[in-house]
Length: 232
Image (cartoon, rainbow, N blue to C red; front, side, top):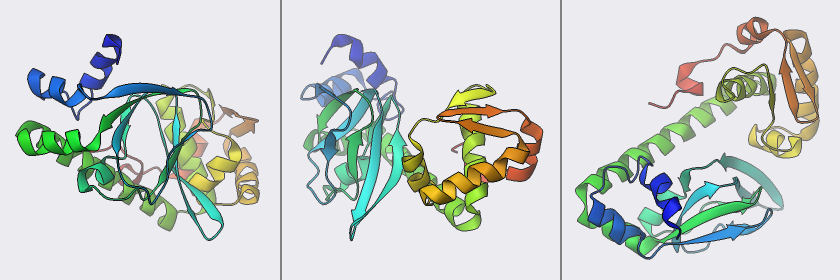
C-alpha cells in the first residue's frame, strides 16, 4: 500500500481514534488493488475474507433473487464496505461491483476482528459505524414505504443538489436503469416520474439535472430530516 493512501484511511471515523501502533498493526496485512469498471468484487453468499475500503472510484452494492436484480446502494470514496459481514464472520448478503475504475484497500477480516477484540477505542468506532449503517437502512426503508415513486425521485434529486454544494446543474451519478432500481421502480416508472417533476422545475437531459425552480420542488418534495438525513 502506498504511503499516500494511509492518511485518507486514517481519517475515516472508523480508524481516526485508534492508537498509532494498533492502526499500523491493522493495515500491515492490507494491500491495494486497482479494478477496471464492471468487475465483481464480492458475491453474495460467499465467505467474508476482507474489509474493503474504497479510495478512488465508485462501487455498486446489489442483490439478486429468482432472476431479478436490484441496486442496494452505491459507495463513494473514501469509505468502507461491507463491515457487518466482516465483524460477524458471516456470508455476504450483497454483491459488489465497480462502476468506474476503482482503487480499493483490502484488509483481512481476521485482522479487523482481532483489532476489535484488542482495542476498545476501535471497538466503539465499529459499533458507531454499524449504528450509522443501521440508521441509513431505516431511512431507506422509510423512503420506500412512505413515499410514492415521484416523491422518492424528487427527494433523491434534492439530496444530489445538497451534495453538489447547492449547484443548480449537476449530474446523475449512475445510469437511469440503475437509478430506477435504487429507487424501487421500473425504468418506465422512472421516465414517467421525470416528466411529472417537470412542472416543479426539474429538467433532466441524459445524465444532466437542471433545477429551475427549487422552491417549488422543495414544496412538492417535503424533505424530512428523519428520512433524508443528516445522519445522526
